Image 1: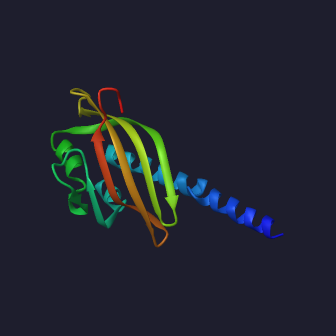
Image 2 (image 1 turned 45 degrees about the vertical axis):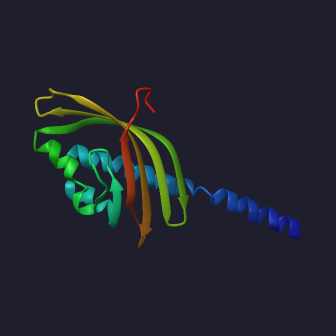
Image 3 (image 1 turned 90 degrees about the vertical axis):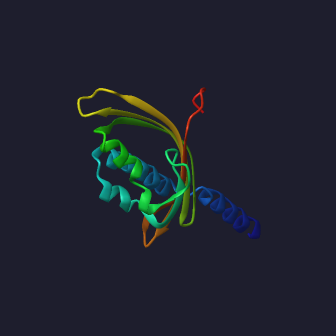
Length: 152
């Protein structure tokens, strides 16, 4: 009987080690929402994804930034009439442990001006750390960088 209980406890612990499928799906859905907000230039909804204590290092910044600068890269583009046209996410890994989640992905983001010209594609690696506070997931840390010549 004790062996059965120990086996059940071990199997249950292993099943929850990476977080439930539902929690993982929530995080990936929030990542897609993140890019949809960028595409729609919805800075209010975009900012709502970020925790007040956020600290991260976006590839466009020479130094890490806090939440008060998290939309700088978007407004830098939109001030030149450049907006996100399309994107594709390659989900690489996710780990959910309690109220903390980390995800890793690559993204191809295609940008163009209002006339659809001057397009460019950013190819990035992104890591976000999410925290669940009062039932809501928010980004509390992150790093992005361009992929290398081999796409990694």
